[in-house]
Image 1 (spheres, helix red, strand yellow):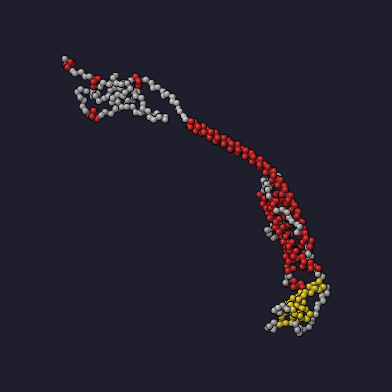
Image 2: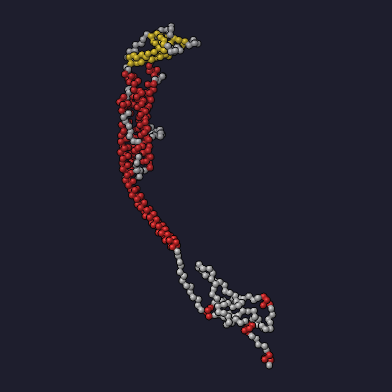
Length: 400
């Protein structure tokens, strides 16, 4: 009887009427919704389909429900819990794969794509063209180098012939200058040399290098070319200076040579005079008109007419020629011409001396100093003829 008095517990009422009456696909009341699933792609986060079985999760119990004592009508304390999860038929069905989507593109997008493809193709074409251009340039450069080398050999041959011709002119000039120097040393005027010198010209100027190719030339050979051109120009300049000096000396030297059997007296010494202090003194005075007398027999006049050195207006004076005996009164004695020329060189003698020095230097410039004293250390410079020989060998080597 005691069993009849026990009250019956309605579990469905206590658990809530949710079981089979729940709408399929709807989340049970009190259940925690599934978190959204992030799917990679252009779309945003898409929530997971409802009704799919979820992994068991711990559900926090409300503090009030956990602390409240179990009521008599709910001895199991299940009133606060949700309806038990029951998978629905929709959830049990497999998820259908995503349907293919059709992408729509407007005409502008198509044109842009075509333009991009054209640019890529154009870029590839430019690269290929540049590549083939480099290959062509290298091949063309090799051909140009070969042609330039052949032209350089011809230029070296031409330059060699011009140097050989200029060397021959230098040798001719050297021989004629040595002959003129010998004539001058004998007191003769080199008239033939003065006439021929103006027509001699060493023909090798800077114009010889215009448009030439120097492929295969040694650096030293190129330097020798420039040095040789400079040396030739200096020789031509010095030749012209000697020609001008010869022209100035021609008349006085010819006159001297014409009167080589005569002597010219131009000065006298006045003796028998005293200075203001009473000391004996001699005066040097030029003759008013020089005397030209035969060297074999010098016949002097009885008196000399000279320019008075004591006259303020350079008036003439006359004195008897001193002969012998005591000097009772002032007299005049002629001065030997050679001593006057040495003590007071005339312009003619000075120019003649300069000409002799110039000719000697000119020969050294062309021929070189030659072998000097072996015991003396000196910085000898090769002559222009020797430089021509060295240059010819360098040009011959450039033709190989």
